[in-house]
Length: 380
Image (tube, rainbow, N blue to C red; front, side):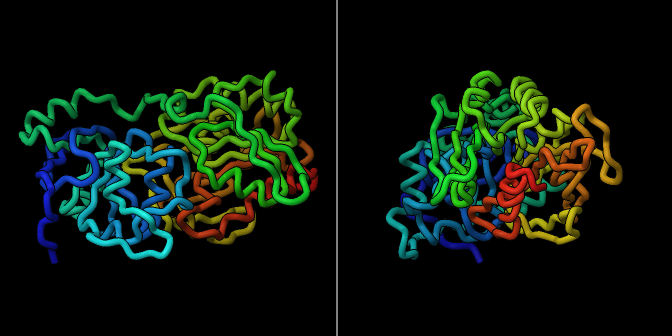
């Protein structure tokens, strides 16, 4: 059932790079925006999605049909701002109903200059992206001629080859204090980190120094960390040569390593594996992953458009020891985790493609932060 038009809304159009066009009405900021069209299957957690730096330069299509009913609050942001290039929904809620909400989604998008479009057939749009793959897109309330907007879409850069880490990383180090007794010190390289990653480590007694992405190994060594963490982030992992070089120096120095999402892809590159772009990626909070070290299946939160190309059934010799795939997606057999063991069989580094900090989303993989602590303690 289609809702009646939202009051005082300007007409808007969405045009994909293959020419497919959808019409709707504007919400949030008016104007034009461009990015890569992707879809997220989460039924909840749109605030966390919109503030995830991994979505930088992407236009997110919500597959859940009703968005905005829980409003916006001051506790659930995953970073300092909204990062999506645009937001596409079917039915935008006309009212918010949550005890923590203090403003509505529409107002927040408008205040941050984010263009949205509502009353779109998001089911048809999602099916199109599944069949044709993620692609460039434009949303406009200014240019309502699809052919003219398409010309602008085709002039936009593609996600393949995009180095977006400098856009999202911090410029100065930030310290997140350990909760309770300080047990470990972690140097976290910010590639687009979500706030809940250092918070999850702090809960386990880790003092986390969040560092800019251009941190050198000499600067990192001065902190004498017990472990190094590489965060999630946007863009093509093949462009992050400096961070891969840093990670190799970390492994040469025998410092325990843990990576999430983009951190997993860069770990794969450091170990000698390639990366590739997925057709439409994994984005949502309900993807099944098997931990091959325990044979347990976890329901996970994910947001990535690139993946590691590594053999699923055999280990690979590296100069630091044997690397192997530790987690796999049960939907499509995409690599979801890696581990590195030294010649004595001791775990010295591991990573996952999904988000164990999971906000919003399941918390079944939170044990990975405990595994990091065990590794830093020399017990893994």
